[in-house]
Image 1: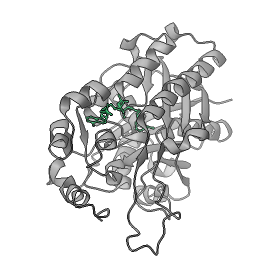
Image 2 (image 1 turned 180 degrees about the horizontal axis):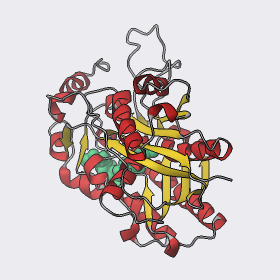
Image 3 (image 1 turned 30 degrees about the vertical axis):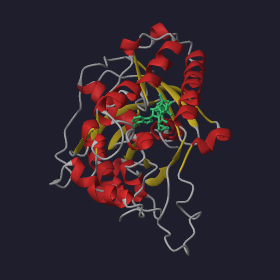
Image 4 (image 1 turned 90 degrees about the vertical axis):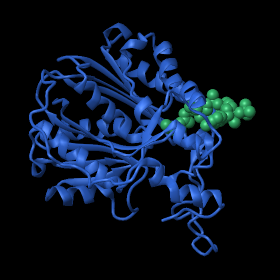
Length: 362
Ligand code: ACO
């Protein structure tokens, strides 16, 4: 069996920042509440579509791996906020990258998308070792938000991360994954009237809401992630002491701490960047992985535990042993189109619409 190793990594965060104070100017919240209850200080607001964020992250990951786009045999685009529903976003990336024949599909398991994708990539490479996988997690979740709803508006941000996976033939790479879904609680996080459930003949068919029960999600998140982590660790005969770094989904700093405590892992081993970006759903883990590498937090041969939970409510864990190379082989000059607006300017129209109780702006 040939293990899947991450050989390239990259991220793309849109430049416009929305701080907690900016949010306090549009809804009834405060920097103090948000920092204390979530750990978030600011988030990014995208001026471009999700696919554009994903494309830049993908080009950076390909350059880091030194793999030409045309060598990729499978493109997995993990997202709950695609540009359009048909066709899939993976095909947009394939076209932009100039790749000809790769399998290309989107994966929507919410915030667990990247960890679910690691499993798909790993299984694909075990049968097709000469067919590298490009795995992207990209989101423009702020597009869904009603900025007057303080309980959800403060939590999310936009961004993308990507990884190239290859079969290296060595002992390192993805060791195991454990995925699942607790569908009984699926209504704790949903947009119930967007998609074909939407009534197209209503006077205002574009109206939809993000339904959200933060406390319920919190409870399931800690339990589900801890269970998934315990499973992969047991199956790999790995203890908390063997883990060099945990890269968890970034939804709430208190959830991250609760997970570490439940697992008996030193909190200092748990990577976190939620303060800068908030919850970017499927993008959180590849962005965090890229930043952990940039900051020298991952040593050659490190044992890494990924843990995530998301809408569904899905949960997932993955255990991997990093390879020898912690530096990118190359860099890409890919950049987003320039952004000339600030974060508050980018959300101003939406804020105005929701204040007036109107429908989602274009
Ligand atoms: N600013 C100020 N006050 C607020 C805000 C806000 N942004 N949001 C809620 N409050 C108020 C509430 O109205 C409530 O007031 P009350 O006591 O007068 O009724 C009080 O703060 C406490 O509210 P809780 O919901 O109990 O706050 P909690 O400590 O549970 O934190 C949070 C809420 C941050 C949403 C938390 O439950 C959470 O992180 N949940 C899980 C994460 C999550 O759901 N992420 C979303 C995506 S899910 C995913 O990643 C898959």
